Length: 198
Image (cartoon, rainbow, N blue to C red; front, top):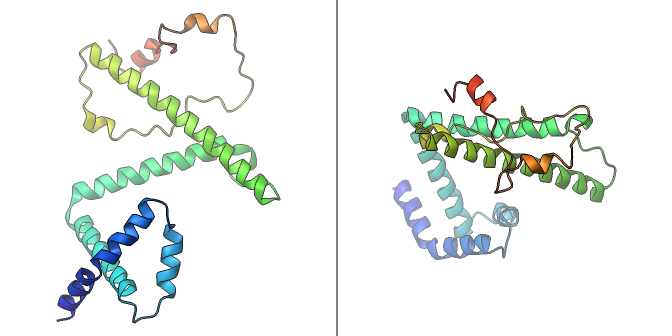
């Protein structure tokens, strides 16, 4: 009886749920604002009750799938590992302050956070582009590089970054090393060391 009533409650509030989802999608309201409003709503508010029921239903479905499906557990674990590698990259990039925001004013803290985000995104974009180029090169040589394997690779890596010391760039010589598309060539010696080329 209780389960039937909960299902009917969600069904009755479905137009309101869609309207709320549209507000979120099109930026007319933030998730934090909606959660705050519904958390403060009275127990008689049917939309707030429907949202709670919907949340419990989604958590139950997710938990049942997680417990019963080993492949799903592995997928979640891979995603968590990718998230951790991104956090590690941010810590590495922010090593001078040991990963802490040290500026005293909010505006300066925001600026410091945006700079870290920009730097992190630059590293991820660079790594992603060169991973893509390496995969295309291997495939053009007839090597089998399945997309399933690529789904395990995270671009949040820092082992190719020089965090310490000085980077000397020969402004005259470096552009001559670029290919016709303006990219640096892949390093065959490193690929051979990794066993990726004969």
